[in-house]
Length: 167
Image (cartoon, rainbow, N blue to C red):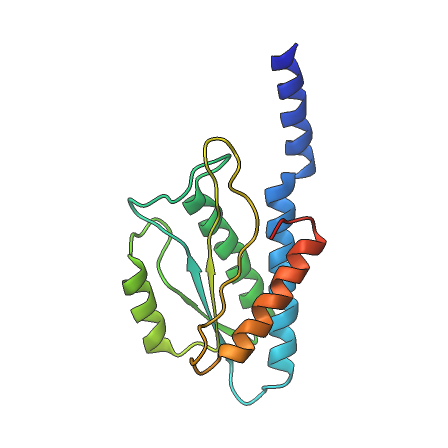
């Protein structure tokens, strides 16, 4: 009976898109809205957005219901497509799908492109499913865009909390 109950629950989650799917959609919609708002006030040049799918190559990141690298690459690909469709953004990726780069190499690539906004997408998981929640890390104090980064991180965290994510 326990196995059957687990199978039924899994099928229901699959039909509903699951929490991961809902959170991913909420993040994407919020980011597009926020970026669109920012672009509205800065028409002088294309808004450059740097997207970093965490991990890659041999480093698959956390493993839970899905490998973190797969989650991050899919999320970044969907976000990139949506932003390109909009036409007002220039997208810079830290790495290609399946490519392995450490964080220093990914950061160096972004430093050359001078993005207006940088998002590094990650996921948390562990075997007993106690790793969960949403995290947003702004630029550290003293950096040029600290205040803007902190404001964006707070807005993103608030939006994630409204769709049920733990912070």
